Amino acid sequence: MIRWLLVVFIALLLFSGLRPWLEKLGLGRLPGDLRFRLFGRDWFIPLASSVALSLLAMLIARLL
Image (cartoon, rainbow, N blue to C red; front, side, top):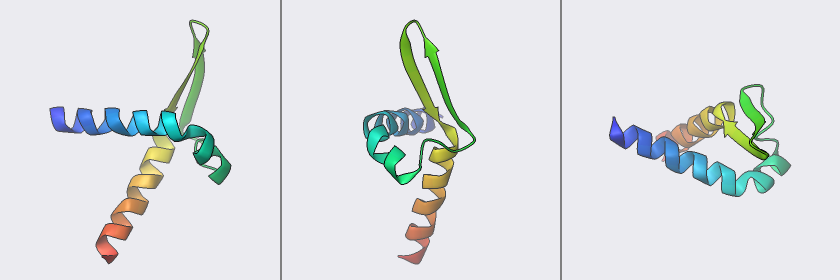
């Protein structure tokens, strides 16, 4: 279980860092991605984009 939490944490960090680039591709604006403002800071939780990128990675891994 700790391994999965670590993977999710790393994925969220990557999404946060790559957010401007991913938004140009259309990711980050899917109907399951959460954006909200809390304590004067914008928070972004890309649930739907994470699933879409995971499926893409799984398809690439199966082809290889």
